[in-house]
Amino acid sequence: MNKPEFDDIFMQLAVNLAKRSHCIKRHVGAVLTKDTRIISSEWIDDALHPYSFDLYGREIFDYFEQLNLGYMNWFSAKSGNYTVYFSWGHGGQHIFLLHELNMIIVTTADYMPGQDGDEAWKKQKSITDMVGKYISKLP
Image (cartoon, rainbow, N blue to C red; front, side, top):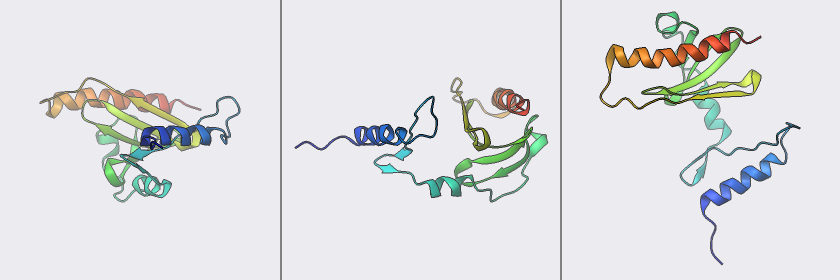
């Protein structure tokens, strides 16, 4: 008997989890993995928990305030009526989590090899501000 690949195991697990989904329109299941391991929800909670408080806020973002830092470069901040958790990579790769709305926003942009400083920051900030403005306008 051949052992199944880990990707196949994880996909089957996500399919089975989707069967227990609370969403009646779309049955969705997800499994967060790294290599051959499943990442626990406790690890995610620890990464999102703020450990450094009120870092920058308005000085660097136009639509986020009360910026806090968790583990692994995860931030939390307020935008409009919502607490937002997010992480970003160089060049505009972002993931934003809004637990209250069960919403995930992902952005991607061109990789900027060798670009640092003000010019790179301007590009990255424009994406963060665009998403922050959208979130701040949500009811």
